[in-house]
Image (tube, rainbow, N blue to C red; front, side, top):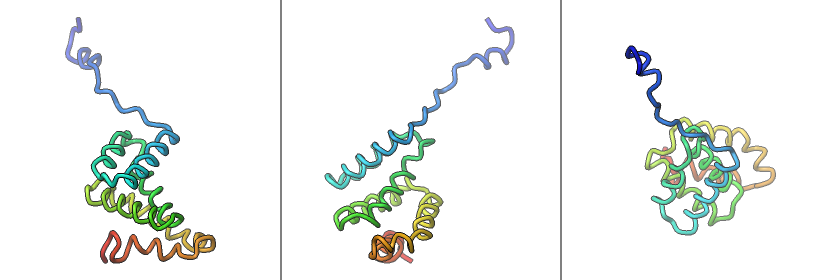
Length: 137
């Protein structure tokens, strides 16, 4: 039995911290969540699936990055579904503005190189930042 309060608190069980997922597991979950959203259009399921990823593993960041890739490189259906997923993440405040801004800035910085392989890359990325895109300036 502890003789003082500090010994008792030192041995008290702590709430388990979530164990980070490895990058492969995060990538698989994000990909499947976005694919399922594209198939079913279920925004609640999209958010629940991404919420299962421990916050430290940055699931929403990875989802936004994959959605950006699909917007730039995907076909029209993939692009529309990726835009829809981003809208949901922003509307539900699941995607922090700084994450959105940083990933978008990185994409914008690479845009000249992306446009070499994908001539419509500029048009596709602009769908995110100008009406009728996600952010109305």
